[in-house]
Image (tube, rainbow, N blue to C red; front, top):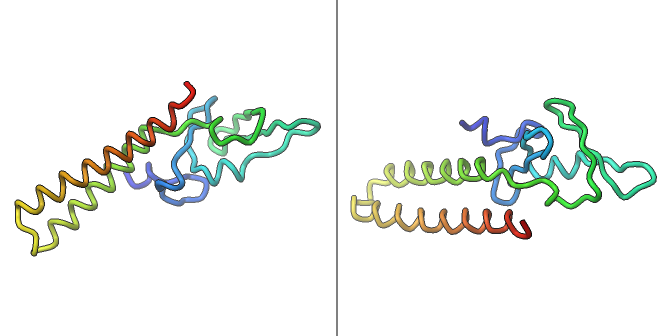
Length: 128
């Protein structure tokens, strides 16, 4: 699953500040940084072209707006779930936490994670 949470262009794991974005024509996902760096200017226009490194599909957009590439919400959910599982593993390794503290700790983390996910989904659906 770690591979699914990694940009295949730069091999960096997706993060909250570098979320996975979809190429709309082919559906492949890459991090924001790689998409931005892959945009090529189209001669005699303000348009940009990007070619998918996975299937070579070429796409042209009117401008360099990163919002031309929707966030991959499914991968964002996986990323948040993966982080939650790591936090739980760390909590169980800490012998100083009893069962009551673990339950409170986990419930608080889930609330924070849900709030982050809701914010990402709300941001991605603005104007749609």
